[in-house]
Length: 337
Image (cartoon, rainbow, N blue to C red; front, side, top):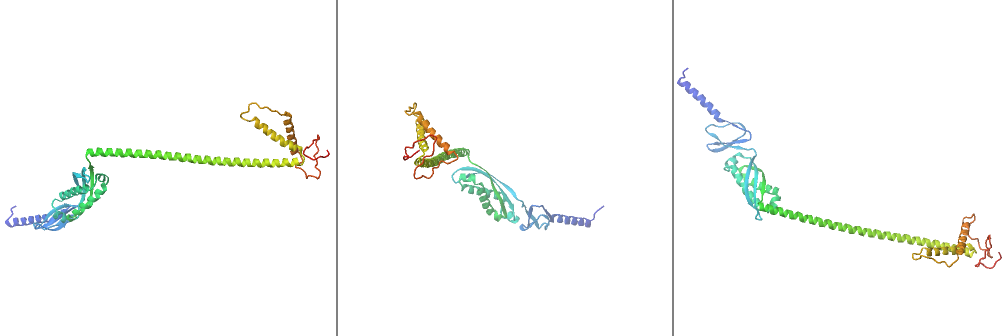
């Protein structure tokens, strides 16, 4: 089949239209933004999906990734405020919010963010002491994030996070810090040991004090009980003496014998129980003690008899109670038996 001149022209026109259509259709993937330039000037930004442009007049200027990206900051030397040299590396997370600003406000976006982050790391860490630097990493991250995010704002960039990955002091400085930590722990252990010894001494002293107080209180209570017992014993002896005196006044010779036998027995007991007495000489008759004990037995029989021993009302003429054997009372007035 042969094509004539008009057929060739028609085929060429159809092919040209197809090529123009394909050149004007642009597909933007999710997570990206394309900038469109018309004769070299920015006009608009293509969103993800199917988009149409004017072929040969408009073209794609920049293809930007608007997803959050990670930027690794290499290790660099930092001089701290107290002239200590440390090595530090970090990582930064950023996201493009405005594609046009990120494409046309700065050249080589990642290199610009990297250098800006490294400069601020040296600035922030250089204004801190070594001890503060090693113990306040969160503070460093917050200050870096605030400074870098403020600096990249005009570029349409949002820095979401800046993290210090590692801080490495020199080896000799690490050894010195280890010795310092060991000395500090030893000092702390000695202080705790001294405090424990002091507390133990205080507790022992308080225990001895409390024991002495309780012992003194016990002795005082015992002395009080002993005095009370002596007082009751004296009252009982006084009462007994009074009763014996009344009985003697009433002419009861058994009361006299009881009184004399009691004192006699107490004296004999005191002599016999003396610690320095080995031999006791008794220049008195044993029958006297036996007679006294007999008087005590007679009194006991009268106490446990049916009638009480209490003396009757004294008559005008004293009367001696009848006895089995007549007894002469030397203390009573002359009377008939």
